[in-house]
View 1 (cartoon, rainbow over the protein chains, first blue to last red):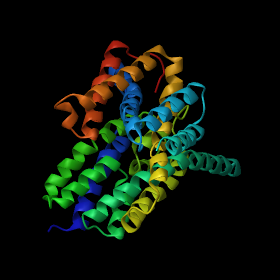
View 2: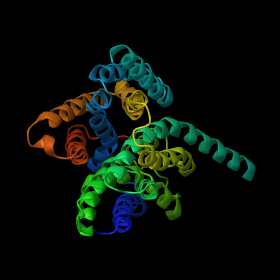
View 3: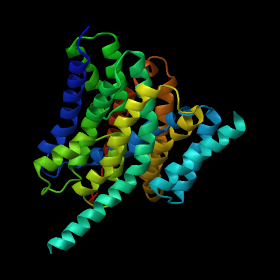
Length: 101
Length: 241
């Protein structure tokens, strides 16, 4: 059996380098319009991909997940903040599952 | 002079701390379940705590745990982590444009410690440049929640009521929505990008072949294709970050 501590260290080394190299090496504003645009769109694409359908599958019931997703979209469309939206989604799931399950 | 600077710094730190609360809550729930998995393969609570404190990555850690469980060679673990966490490379590149050139190497090294999906999301939602102090505030509670959640998961196993775990599991996603929906409301391009991303993500989850890829890999591929497509079709000309 290989050392678990060594495995943990290998994981840390790779993960940290991935995160810290771009931050420390890219010091100047990127001027290429396509690269700039790409980096500008990255957060929206990546967060959207991670949210759906993962959000509706995260809970114990598909229905509570769908309700939480709907509540989240409506609330944020009405410009509710991070914290309020987050907590509301949790409450929606909790109440929905009390009723459904 | 110095006094007002300190005050501004403290205020920024507190602001970050507050924004980090939902992240920490979500992390606690997710890392708890991660801890249960670690316990199942024979890891100790201390190992779980340290792994989470150092790695801060759900999919990455999960991948690592499976490598440990299969007694994989270190080089394979390294490659697996590289693939599972490759999206952070993209996020860090994006984040580098959000930092002022006055932000020094040490500050960048601290920020780099905790570039996660959620903290990246908080960072990009800052209106102007990202203030390092704000990020330190934002990472404080999530770091604690993630590592102690993992540890408690190893120790307590399935003691937390399933209802609570289920409710907490949407906290992170609610936060993601709060970051992508308001800009989508103001920009047709972003709203289309978000909708197309939802659709592609859904399709990739059910298509044979693609769906067998890990979630992290799928996210990476889709991000590159979708953001790349948007950049080619709708290059941003003005001052957008």
